[in-house]
Length: 243
Image 1 (spheres, rainbow, N blue to C red):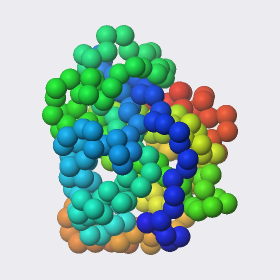
Image 2: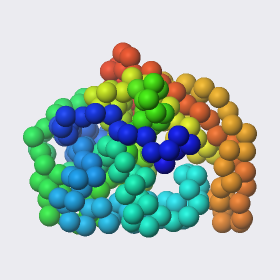
Image 3: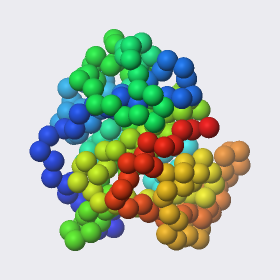
Image 4: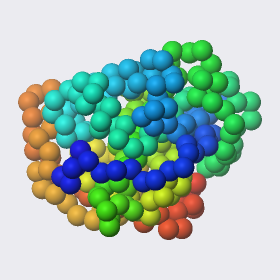
């Protein structure tokens, strides 16, 4: 839910093909990205519950999302699955031929096959939603929210999710992206979006009352508004390799 109320998703005829991405952080490790939505997630027992549990942990941490109350399943469904969701599955042995660094390849691989009978905890590398940031006449500008499970962090998956967003966002019919609140103390995120040529459109002072990372109370933190036009996006999407 936004300040404009519930914003309908862009019209999509069908789910987009899965894509395969190399992971330069881990030799022999690739990631497949799978497009799902509110109805598709029900086809995978336990997936919705796992995604919800990870998001609840992120909200409870109080350092990245503005929500303060831990969402129940209904609130999570309405917020995260109001539009399109992309789920990343790590596949160290599922794909024998992985693309080179920066390459993108569509693959005929279902989410179930990519999972390889593993638990969701072992194979979900991250996930994110894509939905309109504004209604009506400005609905061609999208927004996204990203989650990487704690056990999967510092493995290069955040960079892959970000790059894949620049692939899927335009294919979902959007012309640009805006992030309303990129908190300035989230240095890794700010650096990542700048590498992908997002521009700092403005600074909101004291935009978030966040928990301190040392656990000692809360503090007000400024936030960047970051924007990117999706025109001529291919080079930036493929060029970034996380260092």
